[in-house]
Amino acid sequence: MSVLSKFLLKNSRFFLFLFLQTLALTFTFSENIYHNSILENKIISFKGSIDSKISNFKYYFNLKHENDRLLKENNYYRNLFLGKSKKIKPEYIEILDSTKYKQSYHYTPADIVSNSINRVNNYLIINKGTSQNIKPEMGVITSTGVVGMIVNSTPNFSKVMSILNKNTKVNARLRSNKYYGTLLWDGEDSRIMKLSDIPKYVNINIGDTIETDGKSRIYPEGILIGRISSKTIDDESGNWDISVELFQDMGNIQKVYIVNNIDREEIKSLIDTIQ
Image (cartoon, rainbow, N blue to C red; front, side, top):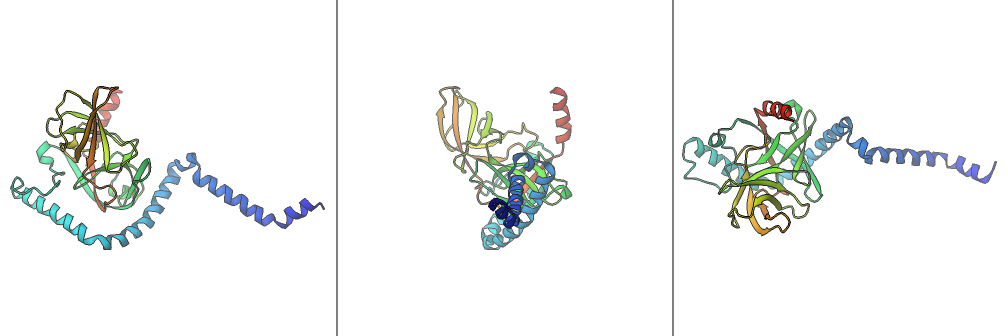
């Protein structure tokens, strides 16, 4: 028996282990395998379960901030139902007023169990899923702004494509004059998004409020997004290049609302016939 054969035989277990590890890593990081819906659902469920425990631990250290936010929100809705909402306006708390825009939406509260803001394409995981009738293309918001859109769900968890994702496009408008455009993220500052397609002849000012325009079946009309922090004219398009500072701190979210447009399927079926 040659020296090489002896060496291979002696270390056969090691080489077998190395082969199996390589195979496992290949399956883990393979893009095609990752996007297989069955495997991704298992990943969402497993990650959601682990991150949920971590999130619960962190939540206890942030109770004061969360209680203050909930008190403001509850105070607003209490006064809304009493017909006094014009007198009391807590900062940025006016997102679920469906009566104002004659909208039909159902809202489901959920907790964030995992969140990222430092990647080019960021995602969140929340603790509600198909068992609570949560489906893809439902919007996710907070009391201070837009968070993202459901892209996948398991029985107890859902994956949310964050607004801090280069594939995200949100129909947005200026609250002051109702001119609308497309809100995008350039992958840089997690506090800033870009609003495009606003013609240069439109009068805009630093500090103007940006909100959803209601032309999407995902987000209701009038949901707050942010305020204009800078503006320039784009030389190529001739339109405004607008930077929008988000109201919602995307790195500090515990509670969200999942938005179900009750008429979403009917609207979608009509759009499909047009296409």
